[in-house]
Image (cartoon, rainbow, N blue to C red; front, side, top):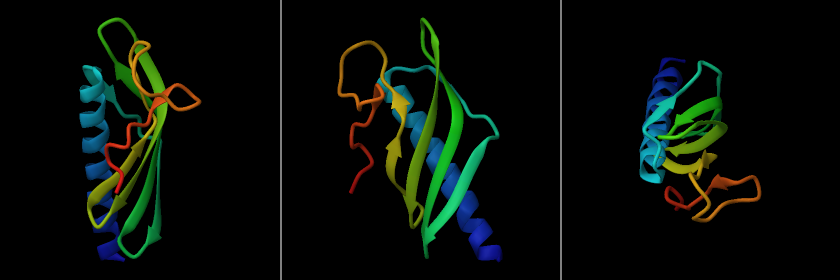
Amino acid sequence: DREVSRLSRAALQACRRAVTQEAYRVGYRDVDFDDDRRVRQTGAYRFSIRYDDVEFEGRRRAVESNVSCTVRRGNVAAVRGVPLQGRDGKKDKHGRADNDRYRY
């Protein structure tokens, strides 16, 4: 259906923008997305998006991580999987940032 594909495209763009903003906030200078992504509609206006092997480039090194986000009605509700730089900050059990920035 045309509306679903339009909403899906908008959700992908919102997710990429939020992941890039979160990466810059953590300290990465460049974010490279591969074409490997999965979009799943989980509700009427809700999408769950997963990007595999997103490359985050900092000053010293590049890190690859799987990133996922939830988009509700065009707004990003959660971003998970952005790795933290260095040793400071809150990390989940896999060493990734999960700072509740996009949580309701």
